[in-house]
Image (cartoon, rainbow, N blue to C red; front, side):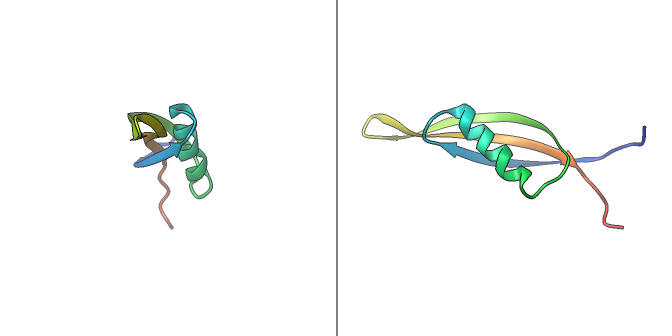
Length: 71
C-alpha cells in the first residue's frame, strides 16, 4: 500500500432539528465538492438561542480527505 497524505478542514453545519443533522449537513455539503472523504470528527456542539428556546443546532466538524497532488 502506498503512503498517503490527508488534509483536514473544519466546517460548521447547522440544522433547526438536531446536532446529528447539523453534522450530517456539513459532511453532505463537503461531499459535493471533495473526493475521498475519510473521517468526520465532531469537534464542538453549540446552540443558537432565541426567546429562551434552542432555534438552531450547530456542529463544528473536522473532516479529512485524501490529498492529491496536481501532476
